[in-house]
Image (cartoon, rainbow over all chains, first blue to last red; front, top):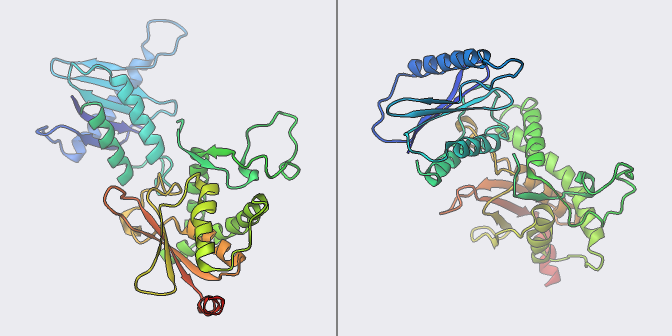
Length: 137
Length: 207
């Protein structure tokens, strides 16, 4: 089960947030922004503290808690896709990559979208919902 | 990201594959060689996106923007018509309205998108109006128009192509694009062709 998706731009700003499960407690808009900003900073720190020398770390990829798992996929351009899911989902890596596909198609190829700004795109919402349904949201 | 769907070559000049580093210039290449060639849909989508952003900075209002997109399409259409006619070696000159419209419905659509348009209808209200519909228009596949521009239909570009072809074959008309969603095809677009009065008179004479 996939709980929610966050997209964070390369400056640490939250540009998209969506919950996919019923009955999740909503935070205020500000709290979501703070959450995204905090994660961005933590991610930056984790990518600096790799114990292996001369190898750049990709930073935090999975965060596991008692009730959920948080997965992060950072693209080459610095955009971060975060998925919060339950502990049993088999293949979140694939979901993250497919989400990136949908993002590149319906956000980046949309002439009305300004890069790094919040995403408001009907087709993105539609195709994302379709994807989540497919992979068992 | 790789896209399985492809956009057919609009003209030989858009094809950049199939040649070695010792390439001949595009004007020296045989026009027929690229007949079945296709270009990446992503490449086209990004180009069209930039065209739209360019146009948007230079217009006042939605109608002005649609007119500009129409102009862009017109320039493509005039070239496209010449290319298609040249490639269809034994094609005949269309003199009747139905002939030219089904030429657009089939041949032109196939050249552009690799498939036929989904329907060609005559308006029930007006004698001089015809509609060509595409259930899933490739040009606007990735485009979400924001609410404040909801009047805009980016297929105005396609309408421009059709208008140029009609003009070039002596069927001067006004061509516009409209969104026309039906069940199962929310993105369906209709190209509305409004023929000049003189064409209707000519049709009468040819009958």
